[in-house]
Length: 78
Image (tube, rainbow, N blue to C red; front, side, top):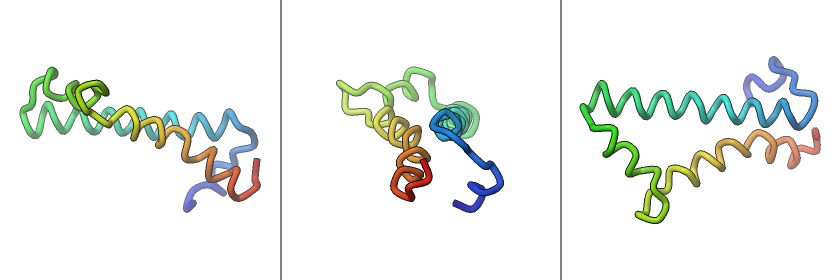
């Protein structure tokens, strides 16, 4: 909400782009932190993204992707 006026999204695609950027930045942070700070293997990091094995990261990322659009719809901006 702090930067939404600065970004000036005008249609649904802009809100989805913002959500996609959030997801991309989160993935970079999670993978970078896991690999370089905590020394995890790629296999261990990918386990968090395996839905059948109980990894819920894809659900969180989907919600993160849709949140800007959902917030705009709730505020009746779009």
